[in-house]
Image (cartoon, rainbow over all chains, first blue to last red; front, side, top):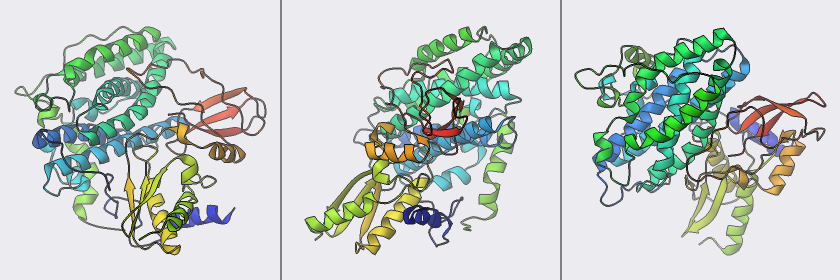
Length: 294
Length: 169
């Protein structure tokens, strides 16, 4: 090992005041050194809410994937899910940090991730779904990543330069996630009769959660040129799903959208029952030991 | 003031910082180091993350500060640039050679991005990834993801050795 190689490994194990890899342990701002101003004419409150919602989608989805760690049938899939979860967590960190900047009240990514309550989270209900098996995992990831990729492809031209940069970067990652999910849906759908039936059943479970992704969003409506109209994404996502389902010998699932509660759903802070349990797990350490370092 | 010679020296120090995950290449080889400039007395170093969640970026910033301080640059700002997004096309020819020598297959040209991203539905690679050990093009991807965000896993069907491949993005 050369001196430089040794130094690189040594720096990973050194214990210093500003050097730890865990929550609350001196992470720097993921947007450090980036111009934090909100462009003229952009509704800062709406931008805060918009970035929060997209950040929450990624944070909650990432946590659901992390819950699969140590439970995958093969090491390769375990690694894949860990990588996808890490990409989404990185997107969540930047989006929550951007929300904090636009809000202007000094809240940082950790404050937003760990010290908000259930009704303050704006993630779509698809993000919090508990995958009962690998088929649901693959089907849900296909729908989520195809939708998010279509969205980020548009946001890469957002009038908010920070959101545009986060989206352009994330789109490259999401394209990879989508292909991974699509290939599994095809392998299972076009596999044995048993895997076909399981994949079809899984899509039937996921499908009612997809409608929320394309519903009119009053926050996006306040951000012309900055946000994307959810309804615009449907054609691109439909084309992807048709191609994948066709190759997988699966029919497009039927089934009514999951009911809203008094007209409200995830984007309004109204979530399904498992969300509270997920949040408790996600936040318990941070809340038991606020500002802890180790 | 940081002199022109001083700036050149700072650039050389920054460019030599090894990547924490791939210590056989430097941050300059990988295209992570975007700029070294001065603002009055301060040195401003700009880096970009390879992937959104890459935990190595913090370590790189820390290494940059430590090495520049050791070379006499006390006031250093390390800034993150998100745009344009990092591309594996930015890995230098020298960086590709070093990766290959260390048994990691370098990436092909990144797919052009304009309009909706086309789906890849088959497991067959568009371009074969040559084995960095024996050079055979008869290789199989065993996993789309690897031990770090930037790599996938392959196996050579000729020499039977597994190897890593830096993903083209």
